Length: 456
Ligand SMILES: Nc1nc2c(ncn2[C@@H]2O[C@H](COP(=O)(O)OP(=O)(O)O)[C@@H](O)[C@H]2O)c(=O)[nH]1
Ligand SMILES: [Mg+2]
Image (cartoon, rainbow, N blue to C red; front, side):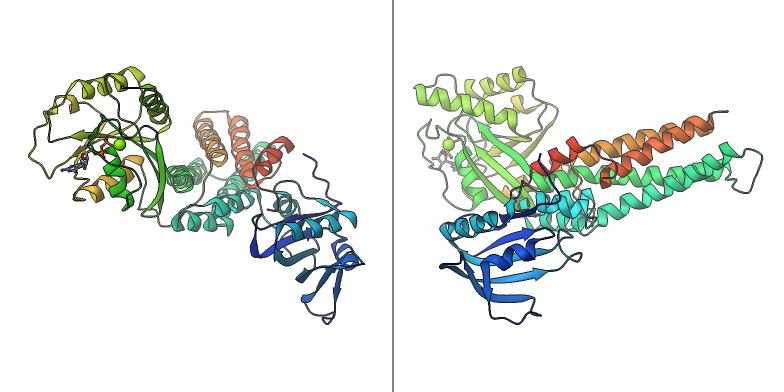
C-alpha cells in the first residue's frame, strides 16, 4: 500500500449517496494552504468553523462549513480540515477533484486512522477498535468497541507488558551481576508476579469469545422437514410476517436471512427450504442444496420438529444428513406445535450435543426460551461487565504471550535456566507490544488498514 506520509490526503468520510450533509476530510501539513485556494469565506480568521463557498475560481460549487483543526491536536495529528458540504455525489466529486487539482491526493483505505496511529494519536488496538465501532451491529457491541477505542483494552495490555518488562529488568540484572544482590528478586516473588500476569492474560483470552460474538454475531440456521414450522418460527422470532407460511410442503424454496438484536447480540437467522426424501422439482432441489450450504456456515442449528406428528422418513433423512456431514455444530431441537397434542417419539433426539426446547411458533410459547438457549450455547458470558473487542489478531498474540509466560515459569523452576527464562519473558513482551502496534511488520499494518473503508 502506498502510504506516503508527506502528501495531503482527502476523501469523503461519510457514506456516499444523497444526504443533507456530507463530510470531506483533508489531512496533511499543507492542508490549510490547499483549502485556501478553493474556499472563500467572510468568517473571522480566528473562527475554527468558517462559513463560505467552495469555488474553482470562476463559479461557486457549494456553500459549506469548514472546520479547521491545527496539528497536533487533531484526529490524524496533522493539520486537518473537515468540509461539511451538501450530500450530493455530483457536488462531492467536484469538491474532491478541486482538492486533488490543488495538491491533495485521494486517501487510501484507512489512511486517516493509519496516520493517527503513526503520529501516536492511538495505538494499533485502538485503531482496530475504530473499525469495530463503525461496523458494530448492536448497542452492546458498539459499547464494547468504544471501550477498546477509549483505551481500556490497551491499558490492560500495557499494565501486563510493564509488569513483564519489570520482571525482565530484574532477571537481566541477575544475569549481568550474579554476585550483587541489590537487584535481587526471590524465586517466589518472580513466580508470584508471573502468576499475576498469566491470570490477567487468561482473563483477556476468556473475553475473546464474548467480544467475537458481539462483533460478528451468531449465525443460526433453521432446518427441518417441510411443514415443521420453520418459516413460522422465523416469523415468530422477528415478530412479523417475513416469510410465506402455508400448509403446502415445499413453500420455502430459497434461504431467507434476517438479523435481529437479541439482548445486544446480533443474531443472524436463516430460514431454509425443508429437507425431504423426494424433492418435487428443480427449484426445490436447488433450495435444498442451499440449505446444506447454509448449515455448513452456521454456528448453531435449530432443528424444527412437528411435535404433533410422528417422526417420519424426512426426519430420518435430516438425521442422516447431519450425521454424514460430521458437522461439529451445536443443535437445538425445537419441538414445535406444542399447542397441539404431542405425538412425536423422541428416538431421533437422543444424541449428545443437543438441547431441547418446546415451542409453538403459532402462539409464541417457548420462543424466549429458545433465544436464551442460543445465547447460552454460543458461550456468551453475561458476567463480564466491561466488554472488550478482542479480535483474532489480539487473541493469537495473547495466546503466544500465555505460552511464553508458562515457559518462563518452567525455566525459573529449572536450575541454571535464567537465560531461557529471560528469553521467554522477552517473547511475551514482544507479543504484547505487537498488540499495541509496536515493532509490527509493515505487511501486517497494510493488511489491517486495508480492511478499513476509504475516508476512515
Ligand atoms: N398449530 C400450529 N401450527 C403451526 C405452528 N407452526 C407452524 N404451523 C403451521 O404449520 C404449517 C407449515 O408451517 P411453515 O412455517 O410454512 O413450515 P415450514 O415448511 O417448515 O417452513 C402452516 O400451516 C403453519 O400455520 C404451531 O406452532 N402450531
Ligand atoms: Mg418454510
